[in-house]
Image (cartoon, rainbow, N blue to C red; front, side, top):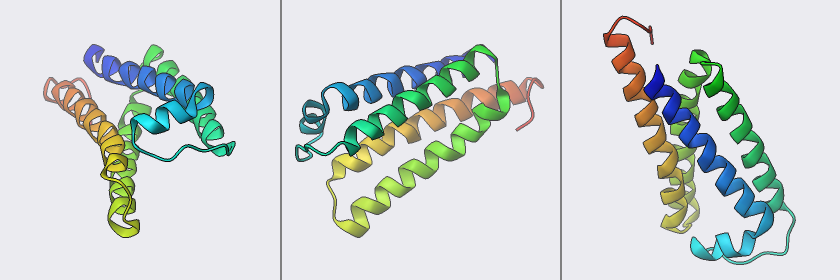
Length: 125
C-alpha cells in the first residue's frame, strides 16, 4: 500500500503546483504550454479548483483511502480521453493532450501499484 500512497501523494503535489501556477501566474503557465494569454478570471478559478482537488488527494493518501485511490484511476483516464478528444474534435494544440497524459501516466502508476497489492492478496480491485 505504501507505493500506492506515494503515487497519490505525488499527484497531489502536481495538483498543488499546477493550481498555484494558474492562480498566481496564469499567463506564465499558459505560455509554457503554448496557449494564449488571458485576462479572464476563469484560469485562476480553475487553478483554485485544481489546488483544492490536491487537498483531496493528499488527505486520502494520509488516511489510506483505497476506494478513492481506485476512483482516481478512472477519473484520470477519463481526463486524458477528454483532453485527447478536445484536441481531435476542436483542433486544439497537442499540448493539451500532453497535459492530459500526465493524468494517464499517474493513473497507470497507481493502477500498477494496486495490482501488485492485489497479487499479494492485500487488496481486491
